[in-house]
Amino acid sequence: DDDTDISKSSTNIQQRRRRPRPASDDDPETLNDNDNDNNNGWLYSFAQKWYDTSGILASHMHKNATIVKDSALSKDFPSRVVHSGTTIAQQFGKTVERTGKLMTSVYKLWNDDEDDEDDNDNE
Image (cartoon, rainbow, N blue to C red):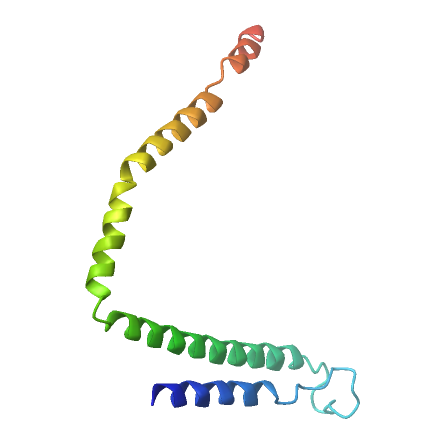
C-alpha cells in the first residue's frame, strides 16, 4: 500500500517537472502589448521552481517517514536504542576531555602574551 503511494507521488513530481517553462522576455510571442516591462517571467520561473522543490521535499519526507515507521515498529528497536544510547554515553568522558583541551587552546591563542609587548611600547 505504502509503496504505491510513494510511486504515485514520484510520478506526479516527474510530470510536474516536464511542464514547459515560460519563454524568455525577449521572445516576441510571449510579449504582451499591455505589459510594457514584461517583468513577470522571473516570478513565474521562481514560483515554478518553488513548486517543483516543494514536491520533491514532500516526496523525500514521505520516504523518510516510511523508513522511520518501519524501523520504529521492528521488534528489536528498543534493544537497538538502548545499545546506541550506551555507546554514546560511554563517549561522554572523551568528549568532555577533548572539548576542554580545545577551549584551553583557544583561550591561550586569544590571550597570547606576545601581543601585550606591542601594547606596552605605545604607552
